[in-house]
Image 1 (cartoon, rainbow, N blue to C red):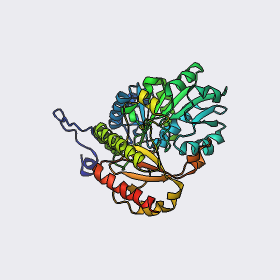
Image 2 (image 1 turned 45 degrees about the vertical axis):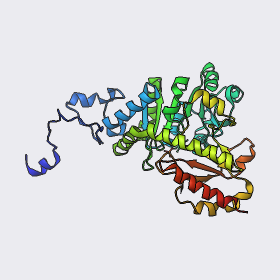
Image 3 (image 1 turned 180 degrees about the horizontal axis):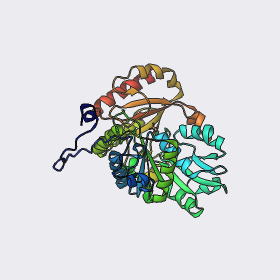
Length: 387
Ligand SMILES: *Cc1c(COP(=O)(O)O)cnc(C)c1O
């Protein structure tokens, strides 16, 4: 062969004794076939196989299998973001005329998806208030096909009674799905409670370093995986192997990071609760409305909780945020750096709960020395409390 040909033909090398602990990063658009017949029948390959880079490479299969094991499921799909994972669940089961019941406390862009996109397809949606439990039955319509939950709820941290919701849904043949990003499958396993779709934003704890976006959905029923993969194929969703390899690396340390963040967040939540006239929102506090259910269903705390300030402090909030030295100001979470994000949830809530119209500070605890975090927060609350 001549030089130009040699530049594009990668020689086969001996890899028999190559055994790395790190999964390979295998990139592909084209997949080649060893015969005309194999090419002609590529559409019959099963969903764990390979036919085009869009549908995954071995790098992606490793992550899918690892998440499946953690979730205790049968199959997992990987998507370019957490929001994409939610959208694909919705589109895989909802048809025009169907109704989806969404937790009022769901990640806010979910309402955006319903309002701006599903609405135009003739898919109807409504919300149910936090803490509904078995009373979810009162919100179900004859057309309800999917109940979408999130527990704890975004920013305000309400715990849902997932077993009670699943029981009602199953009796009526309605699918259930959960955004399990706060807990990850290390702290709560939705599929073990009968939830049909267990979704997480891998962007948060699994990625763990604030440098990638990704989502996943795990299911116990392989047919549901087929529905998800059909939508992904139609819409052309692809997740880059390079980003997947970062999640595979992040996963290796997730148990240690999450345990640390959960312990430090719990200590700080108790300390803030006892030292300041604020409302601390986390199921970890014994007097929290979700504490009993959280104790029953979850095996621990993650590193995310929220704080509602007294109204009189709000005018000094910007100055206090600007004075932070260890916490960074920013949304997203689950990385190595501790973050504070002032959130306002009023636009997304139907239920009239006084705190919903207030500024809610969401704290994500990272891996800094807890003493530095405590000192930063002491300074922060000191500025807020200045008369
Ligand atoms: C971040 C987040 C998402 C969305 O994940 P992206 O990867 O940023 O799209 C969904 N749900 C929850 C609870 C989140 O925190």
